[in-house]
Image 1: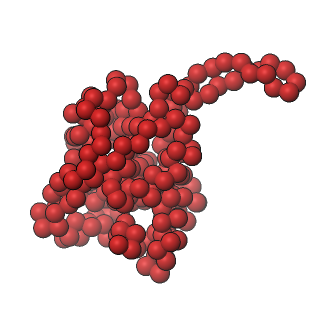
Image 2 (image 1 turned 90 degrees about the horizontal axis):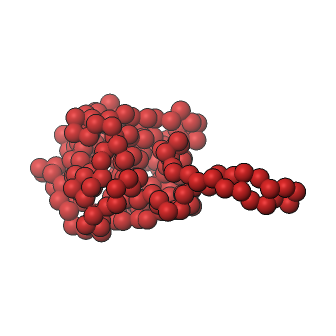
Length: 210
């Protein structure tokens, strides 16, 4: 897999807000949404299908280019923390379809289990998929999510992962199992602790003050 950390000052700003333990819950959620907007924008660069045509402007006919509405991007937020990071996807992308995927990690074994799966049984060939998960730590959850997509006909080259913070164990698992996968992260952590959390943990652990 390839990992991208866009060098944008706004991305650094919102990641810093998310990591600050003094950040209020409402600001935390807003910061997550803004970070998601920026990362999704970067992830979709040179990736979206387009169509050309002509329009009548106030002064002349002009050749133009639009995003092809016949090929909506499939947005898959990992519940529930992924909802805020994916909040602005529909305002950025002209054509999207959202499917929720709920995975719960066992805090002792660190293994994920599926408790909600709204994915279609078969995903059309060529569908572009954004998987949204705020924290990639041990990698168990994101690997399980992508496995479900691959089982439905998606190739790893059609998938882009958007995350606020990613750690080497998760990135290594993704690289080993899904060649061609692209990950867009707000920052890369150095390692994870014995609980399977990133050391540079988001302030409220992506729980939004549960």
